[in-house]
Amino acid sequence: MKIKLLSLKQFLYIFLLTIALLKIFFSTTFLHADSFDIKNIEISKKFDINFQKNDVINSGFKIGFKNLILKIVNSTDQHKLKNISISDIKTIVDNFSIKEEKFIDDIYYVKLDVSFNKKRIYSILEKQNVFPSLPQKKKILFIPVLIDEEKKNIILFSENIFFQKWLENTDNNHQLEYILPVDDIEDVKIIKSKYNSLEEYDFESIIKKYSLDNFIISLFYKNKDGLRILSKINLGNQLILDNQSFQKFDFTNTLDVISNLKTNFEDYWKKENQINTSIRLPLLVSLNINDDKKIRNFEIFLKNYDLVSNFYVKSLNNRKINYQIIFNGTPRIFISNIEKFGFKLDIKNKIWNLE
Image (cartoon, rainbow, N blue to C red; front, top):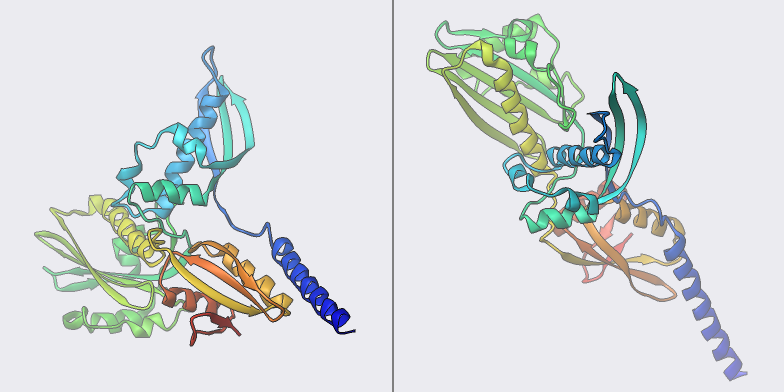
């Protein structure tokens, strides 16, 4: 009887292991967001005796790659990727689809969607010592204030040319979506009363009217020598001050200034979401093996979190399942993001416990 009882325990243990493995292999296998999708790439080519459809598709891959780099790479690093060959680009294409094609006056027009493999992209960028950012759309409040220093006048809202022109020439590769404040007489009075202390003024009376966590306030100082711009940028948990200057400025090149500023703001946002693929931090997280829902949701989190480069089950028993995670960031970032997903971590011990 003693031997039979021992065999029964062994059987139950093996049975639990089998159930646990089934959970691992069959839960959320295909939910991993493992590609960057670039949609609606438009290409046209003259249809003549030299026409090759593959050339058109390759052009689409090049355009898609360029657009992806504009989305995820800081503007100061984009030049490092200009010479990536079409053969290298094709190795990172997971798939593509032709959404629309037509012939008009001997011109072939096509519209493509292309999916690029994230891990292969990260590998190429790391070889160039370039660290990408997660493309994340963000709505922000933008308050432009024009100060004419010669006339000692503050120009606001619809009278301000930067306000008028800011939403023109929107770049689809930009991640920041700007919300401009509504023209308000009371706001005008308050801001104009702060002429001598604008740089210290917090604009809280305007900001609190909008349900937005982030904002940028740009003060445009115009004088005979040119244009100086002081921007107060809140895109994360801290306020950043940025100074730009343009010599011999006149209002005919307003759009150039706006384009320059938008690129600069995009770079700040990219830094907030940057992935340092050179950091490979091993983390060990333990879960209750009987909590199916928590295991499933935890795997969804890991598979869809771009800072997790890899994870696997390191060990398990009849009580716990332990995940080894390779993380491209700091423990603080991991803890912060997993809490946003609704989990709580006990980090008192070497093996973190997911509560």
